[in-house]
Length: 254
Image 1 (cartoon, helix red, strand yellow):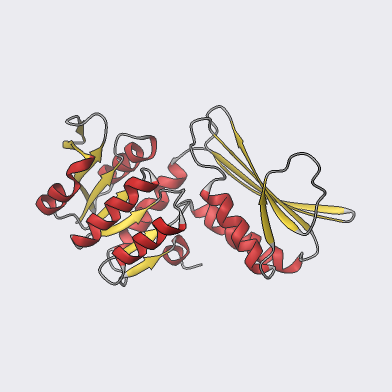
Image 2 (tube, rainbow, N blue to C red):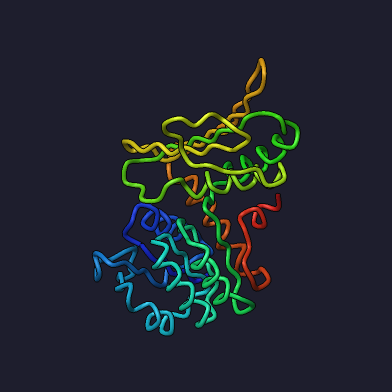
């Protein structure tokens, strides 16, 4: 039985992940954390205050801590989990390079961690596809458009940022710009654009535009279950993986 703890357990993704964990026969939800609804019940588990992570991890000794919170909170949670020997699955986005370095230093060779801006199986295949396409369309203009619900805080999305880096790397380090305004004729760059509105779960479009033709590769998430299903796969995988930081590509073997 895999013992799982979830931070941000009362949020949109956190509540869905806890629901999925509770439905799995080989998993047990042993702890849930949040800054709100502290003391409420989640599948028979009392929601603990996020500031009590160290205390609860010591008491409950989970195998995996899942984090979908904020960049600041995720760094603190990763440090605490690593100190307690708890493996990690992190889907939080918006990290600065310094925060990434902090997490990497904490995780080191102490625990295994799967860190990904998107746990959808389809998105990870999408990343693979755009990387391959870029190699064959090196002279085409590239634009990335991502669309999310009005409450998403960071922009562009972690998925779009990762997509831009994949394409840039495939093309030898092509420059990436974010949005355009005023006089800005197109040069040899990758353009990234963020749209926010309504309750859109997440759409990502990569446009390769050439003379006389264009190709679009699109991924659309119809519900957050696409992400939660990937998290469940990552939880099972991380408990048997070697220590260090891994990606969802490692989980899927692609």
